[in-house]
Length: 83
Image (cartoon, rainbow, N blue to C red):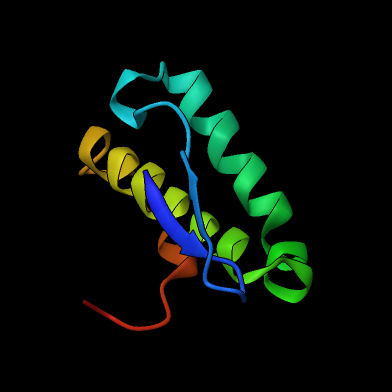
């Protein structure tokens, strides 16, 4: 749960969704795709609470992805420098 506040100081509590650890791989990818599709609109036009929720949910889902796929396949042609 995340706490946010309206301009008048009233608290708003919202849940970011299902625990990513409980999602099947297909659901995890669908959730990530949905977030990425809505990112620009949320950044440009969403209220602060929606943007904070977006940040948090993106971090939760991406952290779960990295936990499941720590050795993910990286396309060498996309590297901008040698590591």
